[in-house]
Image (cartoon, rainbow, N blue to C red; front, side, top):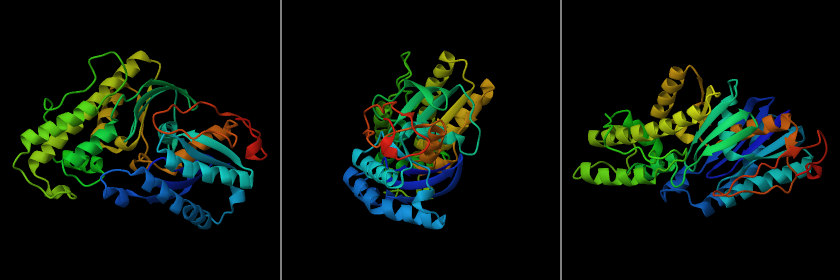
Length: 362
């Protein structure tokens, strides 16, 4: 089955084709340069850019693969959570394509797509703990199989990726700050006592990183006073050593906090022997190495996507869509688009193997 994946939940317009679980091709238009002018994503601009790029990217993907829309067996689209305007552009395009061609349609939970992307290029094993660490979400799940996941914990304020990017902004790093902060951290020496490990003095599996962001602002005021560097900082080579050390300490605090909560999840679900680690922060070098050591020490297995598949992309959406469609699951054309802050409903149902998407049950 050939599945088209569409991703437009934030500021990346992306489409990809997956055939029988294997990535065929992908196209992407990034809006990073536009939003860098404002130091963060502007929702109205994001949705307008999605509208501008969506059709052109689809045409380019079909041309590169010498395909017609009729060759698509299923269209999978991120339905949420995310920026509502951006999501609506992608879901409207997907529904129009499904209506016009009669192919299946699957509204994919963006968070599950990130975690299932671990299966692109490697075989997944279950039960598993899933740790999603991105700019908008930090969440823990217990997967019984590819389509059954129980939520264990989530962020109650800032996600880890948001803390990275906002701390990078206050330190004068170029947007997005999280990537450069990690590069600076590799050049620094961490002080394990500089930052707290937030929200650990409780039994929950939820996360909170707003206090760590505040601690970074205070540390920068106290430790970097009188030290100058180019702003916005674009090259790690131009950073003073004091800034690199502070970034290393911040990186360590985030990684150890994520590890502490994940360790609790495994203690409560000892049947799980696999960790699915995904999201933009999963590309962070210290986070990856921390969890590699943790799972090796447990005699378990770490599954993490390649760095290119950690950030928002359409390959993960297409792959998740292929998993669901292969089990006969899908949606009708009236499925709901879900903004950030609301739970994505588990409302997929068995759909006919053939026939128009509009006739499928919701």
